[in-house]
Length: 200
Ligand SMILES: CC(C)(COP(=O)(O)OP(=O)(O)OC[C@H]1O[C@@H](n2cnc3c(N)ncnc32)[C@H](O)[C@@H]1OP(=O)(O)O)[C@@H](O)C(=O)NCCC(=O)NCCS
Image 1 (spheres, rainbow, N blue to C red):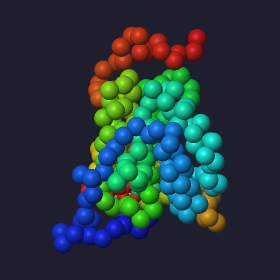
Image 2 (image 1 turned 180 degrees about the vertical axis):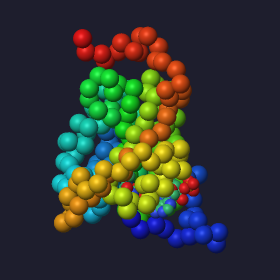
Image 3 (image 1 turned 135 degrees about the vertical axis):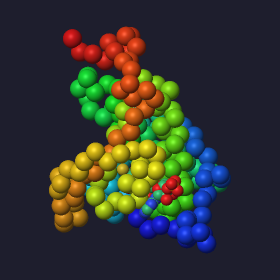
Image 4 (image 1 turned 90 degrees about the horizontal axis):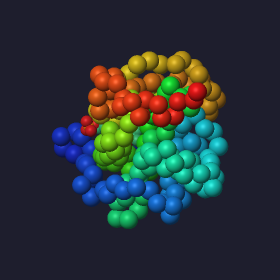
């Protein structure tokens, strides 16, 4: 993704002070869909190949909310310029303390600190809940922006799945990065949390 104008120090000018991060409302999802559709159709970060409908995006947000997980938007002068949310990492019950994150910035707005501001807030919100690990599944080992974003927020690269995707006429890797939330694996969950979501 193209980055933006740099300051004299060589880093892009940061906008994050003017950016407001808030919980996404139903009305924000149209802009969220537009942002995501661009990346689905033009990039390799997502392994979806067809842009989801507005109804589908609304249903996905509702599912996130149902899990008690955050779905955030970044707004600049009232316009949605990025979004981030968490979702269960995998459905089987033993994964219940692990979540996956998604973060997308509007085309043309990369490199201004928006993705970082979103991810910082997302991590902080998830650390207030029961979750202990956050996983980033990054489409394309050449996705320097996403890899740098996650590294800057304490994620470590744990592996690369080679050529598991085929998109835009070529094989695409998945890069796996991971970060502990709160106490991570240093302590056990509270007993009520341990039982929650367990299928007998
Ligand atoms: C990845 C993405 C969300 C990053 O958001 P962003 O607003 O551009 O990121 P920021 O400007 O907040 O930068 C965050 C950090 O990553 C670094 N970074 C961002 N893009 C970079 C790039 N292309 N190359 C090197 N470093 C980069 C920044 O220097 C910054 O580090 P710092 O906070 O230590 O200064 C955005 O580029 C995007 O939407 N990309 C396309 C979709 C995508 O890949 N989403 C992730 C799916 S896993």
